[in-house]
Length: 124
Image (cartoon, rainbow, N blue to C red; front, side, top):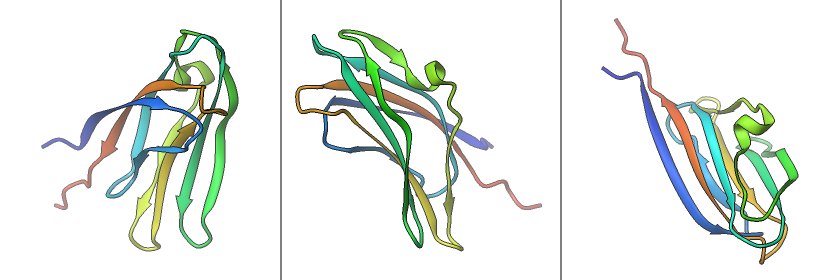
């Protein structure tokens, strides 16, 4: 029996419109890497937010306007030394999401998120 799932998720053509990368809908998620590729000829300002849906909702910036040079690819989790955990709970009701965006319509990037989904342990 596996106690974790390793899941990749790829996204392309992200710009200033906030894009939800993943939401913890069932179990806790651990983000292993977030590879960001600046596809343009100018620098982009990368933003990463964690949104917690509970009462009251909360939003926090994990990365605020991090500059990524033209045609450059980085693993933002490794580069910044982040430990990102996304929680899910039924009682009380809590669900975390990870959202990214740039600062302009012409600041286009692709990204790949790799995360681990923790499963419930079996009861003896």
